[in-house]
Length: 187
Image 1 (cartoon, one colour):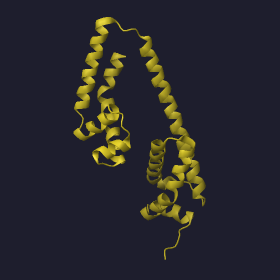
Image 2 (image 1 turned 90 degrees about the vertical axis):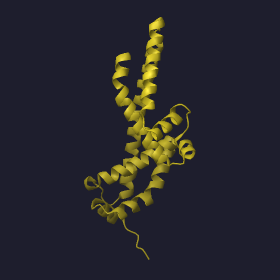
Image 3 (image 1 turned 90 degrees about the horizontal axis):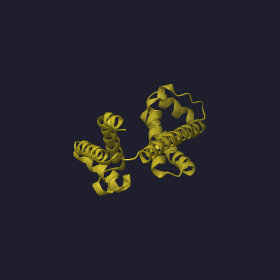
């Protein structure tokens, strides 16, 4: 019969890079941490992503961890801080987008010249989207043009939600890199 490891044994194993200790921590705490975040945030995808990223960072920073014997308290405090930071970043992003949209609404179109620039910009954006890897482009278009959720895209394409997330991240990173200068120039 397997012995249940104490928090201190799990922490010591984690610090040493023991994947079984890490797996045990994940299996023991990922569900309760997810419910903790979901109860306060009410964003299923955001909660899943936050917990997933949290555990990735836990592994990446395993040697630097300053955890005494109370692993539970450490994990819940750390996930709470991560959640508050994420919510804060989203608020800043929302304020920026709202401000930008207000600016665009306030700018009065300047006739034909404005329409030509808008059409040209749309062509450039479409060309960049067409230049994405075929599967990445398909995921991006299902998300942005069809407004499908990660889960719906995963089911439609027969891939995992994590793969959908990775494709979206890479697509947005590529488009931002390739179109960044264009957006600064136009706006």
